[in-house]
Amino acid sequence: MEENTLARLPRTDSLLACPPLGDSTLPYAARREGARLALAELRESLRQNHDVALPALEVLARRSLELAEELCRPRLGRVVNATGVVLHTNLGRAPLSPRAAEAVRQVAQGYSNLEYDLDTGRRGSRTAGVEGLLCSLTGAEGAFVVNNNAAAVLLMLSALTPGLGVAISRGELVEIGGSFRVPDIMAQSGARLVEVGTTNKTKLADYAQALEYGRAQALLKVHPSNFKLVGFTQGVEPEALASLAARYAVPLLCDLGSGAPGPGPWPQDYPTIAKWLPHAQVLCCSGDKLLGGPQCGVLLGRREAVEKLKAHPLARVLRLDKLSLAALEGALLDWRDGVLPPVQAMLSVRPQALEERARALAETLSPFCPCRAVPCMGQAGGGALPGEELPSWAAELNPPGGPAELEAFLRARSTPVIGRIHGGKLLLDVRTLLAGDEEHIRAALAAWAEGQV
Ligand SMILES: *Cc1c(COP(=O)(O)O)cnc(C)c1O
Image (cartoon, rainbow, N blue to C red; front, top):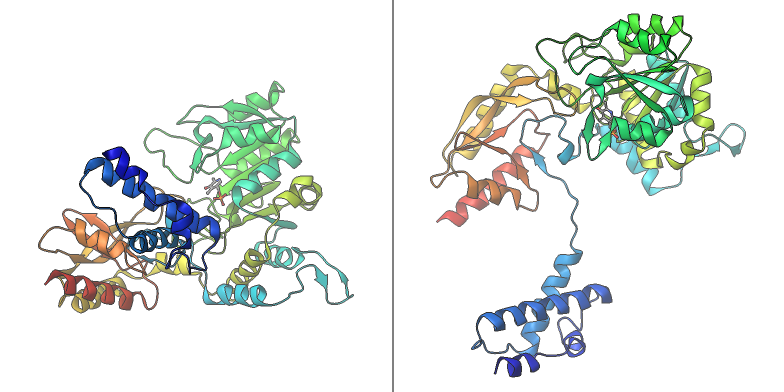
């Protein structure tokens, strides 16, 4: 009997011809996949319950269309970051400043002088503009930009140390996530990894030994930006490492990771561009961490070394797209004018301002859910300031049935609100809210409350 019912299932062809699936303008492949999934669903429910009546063809066609639409719906969109984690890699890292975002819009919607020299009317350099700005801002002799910092590290090693032994501390053989592992990148570049020191302590003598016996012909410093060594630890200051490199006439290269420009709302001993640039032949960092710009990799250093990077075949493979280039220029102009990028502004907010904002938010939300303002501990972001706890303020929601259902509801909104559950409550940290986010949160809570009655 089961066989009989299954045999009576409509054919995909007739389903594809039946409205509303038949009238849909979705691509054929999506409609066909929707029909296949709907039939598979039906087959499964018939297997579980033989008495289920076969639905009408139109009903099945409507279900197919639903599934096809689900396959094609937009996936990437704005969310409200109420986690308090300023640099949240899963939530897109640094939000762009208004100026950087506007620069992207201008270049995206029209033609641009991307590789056109307006002075001569001839072909120009794609990166000359941001290179000049980067040199003026940092004092570097040369600058270059690529697609992301992982690409910058690969290019730096491929161009400057192919076939050479590169000494690196055992405490810096890090994995940054998303499968970026320093030893793998190094192997890919053709450089030879020469481990020195130990996991927790590396001394100048460890580097010196690798150079003295000819095992290494270059030094690499990597900032372990997503974890923190505490306790019995030792590293080497940039000055000492640089004079060792000079004594042996080998290059000192540096992957700074987060790209904090200089002193700022981070610990005083934080490895910044200002601190390392005078000592490194080339250093690189991400554009979208503490620098607060778009995803990109920034390379700064000595003129001849940077020229070698630009001339390497990988430079073309890893080149930055025009939208990111526009955003980076906007971010650098903010830097020039002393305008803090959003991430640095968020890290610098006074506790009192956070408290006031949390109190105002809690008051707005109270009509919909038991809520109060509470002090809490946020994080700067695992990818840049690991272990740095940031005292912050949050609206603490305490729905009668526990926070899980509300958390999921907020996450499923068309503008999702991402908070975090802590101690049986849902915390919405105000540090990472952008202008207008409170209104999204209020609307979400109002919709939730409506569904509760
Ligand atoms: C984040 C990071 C990277 C990777 O940078 P992306 O811009 O994400 O490619 C590499 N090295 C260090 C030390 C980092 O912190």
